[in-house]
Length: 68
Image (cartoon, rainbow, N blue to C red; front, side, top):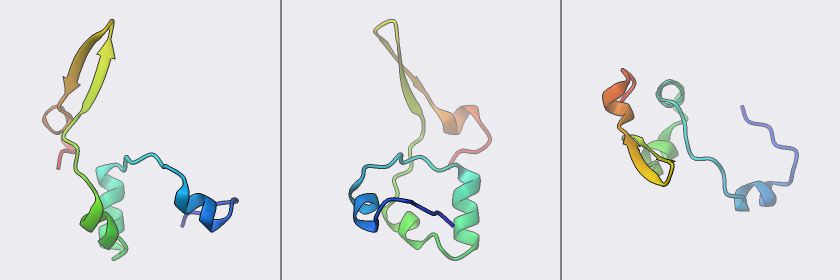
């Protein structure tokens, strides 16, 4: 359950962080509340970092056991 103090309108209009761990995705699916996530969610295979003006891609699905 997610509880928010601001109004529903404020929460729905606000840009949110978009990262959910694989364990959380699995739990939502198992609880039969992950339909929207499965329908609209984007699977990201990694992250992009910038260190000293140089770009680096970390392929999380390759470097961890929790890939898509």
